[in-house]
Length: 601
Ligand code: M6R
Image (cartoon, rainbow, N blue to C red; front, side, top):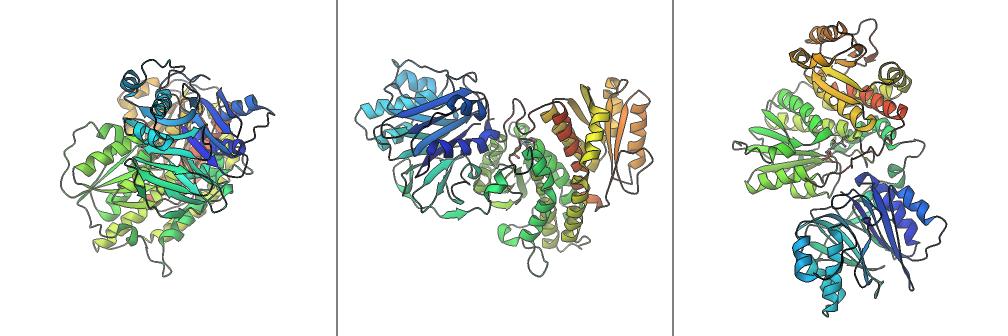
């Protein structure tokens, strides 16, 4: 779970690589490093900590050179130290390499091919670069040495390599870790872990698949398989621009992304509605017959979106739907009926746990659909069908706009399944999503209310609860995840009625309990649950739909379609989490121990 960049062109490589790495920091940020080469020198700088620490280390040193590679790390093998930071150099100093992933057979390879080479770091990565050196010393040309080594590696990797003896080329390869090629016609080419890291140079990309490598110079970029055969690959354009990967007027990506949600809703409408106002999702789903059952598989926030999706699909399309945590499903030996459609929900499209299940169920012959924000990502490529969430890049580790976009796209998918079965349609989904967008506009502007709630309920507390029932339960578990991951306050999302079966023992004087109430059928029940905790000293903060509100409620939500309430009730929870993290001086966009894209199991 690291990020890598490789650049070759006319610009200063240090600047291009560092800006790319900053956009990849979400993938890991415990150490970072760059290598920039020019005719005379191979300049390597690496430092423990975030890219800022690396920049301070470099200081005012002018590093000339238009060829460079860089790395931002989330440690797996070896502690996050300067020595373990990438790039790593081969024993002769000829080759320099960065790597994202885990080489499972590194010890065997070391013992067999380079037993006498002394490892300087504790990383698995170092072995790759020593092996390339060893093969080159056996007489292989660099590309052949690179390919020989790629054929030996077991595990996951995205690699970029520079050869000091011929700095006119960069070599890169991938297997089970993301890597994309960025191309231009102006004498600049690149590779990076994702498109955002290259958007300052180009918005034209070529996808790289597992067990492929690429060799590029300024003007040409060639993709090959591990037998050395050239692969022709179409270029595609991403309609993101530089502003979508910068904070602009905001202090943090998270707040920017919360604020972007109304626009994302409108974007989804425009992507999936045709000129006659009809749903235009069919071309992505061409050939998909209506399944008898749906299994949604995802992790974290995407799993929470899946829970909301289940209720929407079951209510609108009347198809029984199960939702599973990917890492659990993988080892559950589940009984799967015939005619199941597996839906993988993933912002990044790279989550290893979800990919594991996708591979399993594909092998078993099941149909798969991926709902993702990242075109060309692994889950996007490997599923039979795909729907994009069109949320624009989500950079903050805490997922916000991706969650609401996933739910909106599932709502449209539910309408599609309903129409395919000729069921009666009782909901104008585009109209409802427009209403949601307007409601989100109002809510996102209520930042002062969120700050006041944080001051009143969360100042100095160590733990708190979020309660709700049905759709509100699905939202409170997302609210609790958001709060804990960025503010480090212990937060539990609980089904309101379940609290009294044990967990209520934790309620003490002043324990904050956030209560979400949007369903008139069960509003009274949730109110009773709130009273139960209040009677034990809890400090309750109620977020409630208009019409169900009472005096003293903290936040009244605009009226929206009952199936879609999570799209609005989540906004106060996102804002409360943001301001709680800010109040505590936490690093909002890059919380400790986490990475945006979890590409290890
Ligand atoms: O990229 P994915 O949606 O597959 O990521 C899954 C989870 O790691 C992710 O949703 C995570 O829980 C969020 N970043 C939390 O805010």
